[in-house]
Length: 496
Image 1: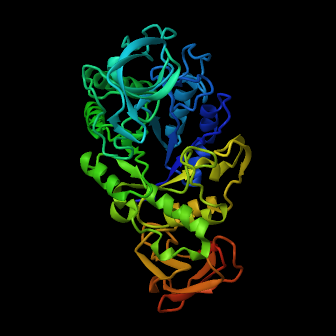
Image 2: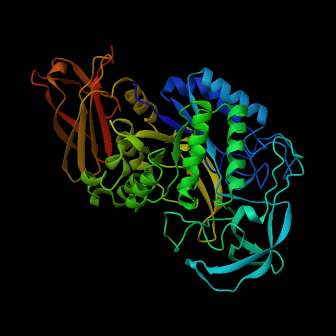
Image 3: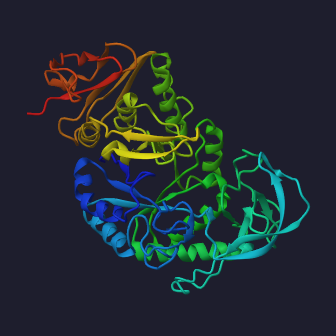
């Protein structure tokens, strides 16, 4: 089988000009030719900020850029018609399309309700600091701009487990809603803050069976409307894991389709919790390898003081490679964002080699590394910062090597703290396959590695272009493969 690669086709600061769906349609064929097999698209529905919303502040799941709501017909990314056309064009080009699904919370309610709540301590949401009291909460969603088209379901306070704003007093706090389905939080696996069910806005209560049924109906409508191939599931650590067991089983059973799914359980330094989630959901979805991204971040900061031999320690790709989606960056970790943990530019080529050129994991490339990005925003220091993210030189070469060359048995040479290497021996299904990869976070060095006797007499060159000389592989298949400091080299058969 060919190596598969996913692309996250957006970043947080993509311009709010309605152009993304058309941009995707125009790029689809080129992306396929570059070696991508699947594309993860941002949330397609209308958010509470209308045409400016990135989609993670869900307002109306049924509005894909069709109705005049929240000050705009289109979403940040375009119209419903443009989305459907782009997905169709991408699939015709041979790409799978994964849609970002945001079902943890909703925002921008149309009406207020008088709701009974108990206030909790933010650092320990299981600790109530008030008796039951009434507040005015924005919890009634009637979607007047849509007028009941596609669904007449009205969301009210019985559909939510918590809010963070009292409109009567204009006070901000975390309030646990007392409804007929519970007087506390739902059980979630993440124990941060005592219970991390509540994340933001109006928190959806999955104990309400009417909510679960409505979201299954919406899933059917969304698939039948857009025709996506799979899902990226947002904020799953804040949700009852059994909801997605039920939701995915329903859709997969009804349509007899795999619906490849990857969940965002962002726990960079808590691998056991990720294992617990996998067990709880019966391995129904892959997870982003947040611990590996955390290791990349640390390595890029610590430079030669980091032990490269430990780069895969305590990571999902090490323990559950079949469920690990590996990544270097995403829209949350990029500079000035909520989970900012940016991998330094110098280390990114090395990090991409570590996810693209090895056997294990399903790698996901980030939009800015392919296209670059320039934006300004306020940081945690209260100052406005101008950010320029350069597109990553050599990324397209790594994608070519992954798709065409990086096959066969993998042998690791993780012998030095500041320099590691591995070989892929090649296979019979991919002509000229097989490569030797060397990384250094210290100085110039070389690794003596066995590429295999099947390559004896072949001429190998550095595909990254850091060396001009060629290596003739000896009869025994062993050779010395050099690498420059703070860099990587990929040695493979010279193409005629």
